[in-house]
Image (cartoon, rainbow, N blue to C red; front, side, top):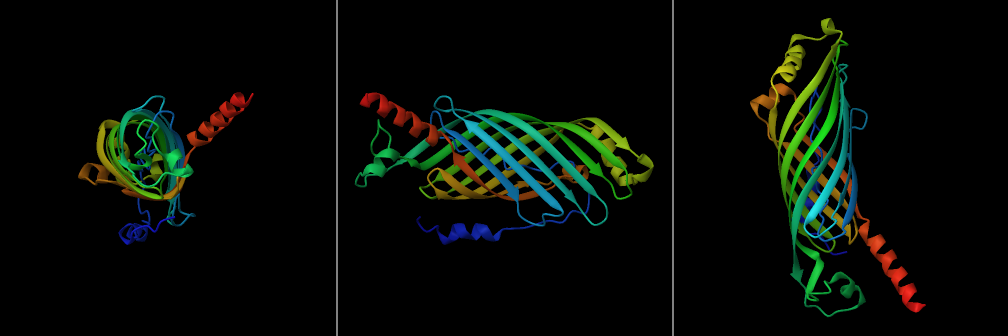
Length: 285
């Protein structure tokens, strides 16, 4: 594996963990980062947070598939929970799906061909290396989720919510490492609000509950930055997602940052190899 430039390694130093002092009603996921580049690409990924596992837990599962060139489908599941020593606890999840398009610009590679290089090159354009290049993508998605909160004095609330979003992404892909960045514009709509033991909930938390019940929808801007390192079809990644803070979101109760680590696996390569072996067997007979 080639050495990753020192400027990229600086990314690893950004490992912040923020302690909770209030209840949250929204937490950002990793974003749609499946990096599909050609027809029949199929990628899956999973990630979790770094930090105090006793107080905060995050899980992201994502899958993407491209049935034809430049068309992509993505599905994801995100779950998070967090508490503190004062008795506050919150948990939420969202299941979402998106449809989008992508455009991959592979780089020219005029190095001497060998067996491994031939596998990486385009059959129609032998000088193009399909494992190196710049990827642009765009997604439109929607998701349904739930959020539950337990307050300091023992009261509890529950909401359902819907998130609609559009996302644009830029990805630099190299042989053994890469960088990804995306920005998302989203809209949150809360519904089916329920509250339990209202007398045990302080006024500030009751005001947030009323805000969510009455003033829909809430707009937000999110961005994700990812560094991934590994071999061709299996990579580890480090991901930071942040929400642009506004007065509206501050009053709502939004977790501004999530830092996760995980993996992405290009499962389509296993199927391609299997199909190729089966075709070779048929030719032998």
